[in-house]
Length: 543
Image (cartoon, rainbow, N blue to C red; front, side, top):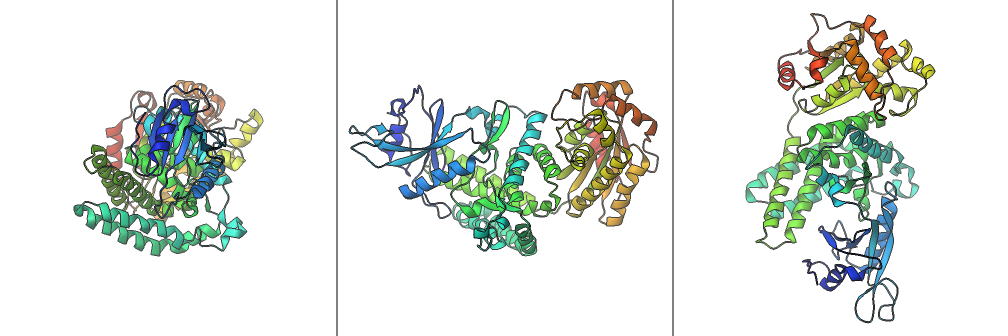
């Protein structure tokens, strides 16, 4: 019999569920995954999730009735975004030989336990593990951002729930409570050398809350507090048939679920930052915001990033406390908790002055590639894409394709003016919130660029700004456009005809502009990191 160490659940039942013969279908090998609140049994075709008999205050699975309730709620909530994974809730009984039965027996006519039954997927495809050895494709990144944005846009808003709107759920004080609740656990188990940093983080949280509380309330009133996932990090995302899928949202605490959408997204962003993937975090944030246009949410992002990093520190600490004191795994987990605390401290540091970078070039020059690469050298940057704004103004999704007639409307002079005006307005909102902005647009003429320079001067916020021009031969732009025509996730509908019509209008940067020119042919072969860093580090321009 396989022995599974857990002080929090009847060992006999755990051991029984580790036996292949305990299941009503063919099982060759049982693999288990244990967290501080559950045990998952991987049987091959199906996964069965057992809730531990625990009460942490913020979570109470201490009775069979509660575990049954939360199994059914987990099923209901997670079917919102992954109905194909969540198959049902199953009851466990014992037969006269004290073996697992899946129907009522004379021995136990009532269930002794409940399990959530899921379709099993390859644990190696969980993003937390996948990204250790390989990268997501551009299409998968786009799909993941769209999946989260679609879910948030369709999720129930608390302000539309008459039974909930007058309750404390989603109010600033309720949102603050779990933030402050992180600290007692962290204080109790912290290395004494880390106590000053924890006190700094606690003071920072309380000070920021005072400044942001009224804005948080307005977000609740305006429908931004929704029934979210609540635990949106990479270990709760997987690839199924190469497509991203969410799972394991929070069912056990309403206050953790009815939250601001940017708090939900912040969990994924800090997880990526922790795993040394800040550019991917910024890319997902940019794609998410391009769909939701919820740029004002950035005002709360740092606040929620600190909170989410401390949640991870607390959860990692709780997991460590369940292990023997001499365990190497316990030592590793406590070190991880400390690293999350340091990440939270990093987020509280003052930002450097904001920066606006325009990317100029004809369609097919490589601006979108360059914008993504710039995220690795420009921290806290948001990409604004003219292609995505254009589709949004036209009322279609980024991946929708248009007819030749619609294409003329999409790239008309009138639409171009609307696109640049929208980009200008979005850039202003983002810069005012202290984030950097990278704008991916053709910027063919000086008149397209000058309003953005004027914006930086007008804001009087010591904003550095400049333009990176990609000098592109027609033949290379043609090849790029023809290649991307087969990429469904590319938002651009500019064809070769559109590109050729751009060249007569093209006005490269003039001497008075703060500009860097890149050769498109060379850019296809390597990313000139040092050249770009030199350009960004010199005083491009300061208002």
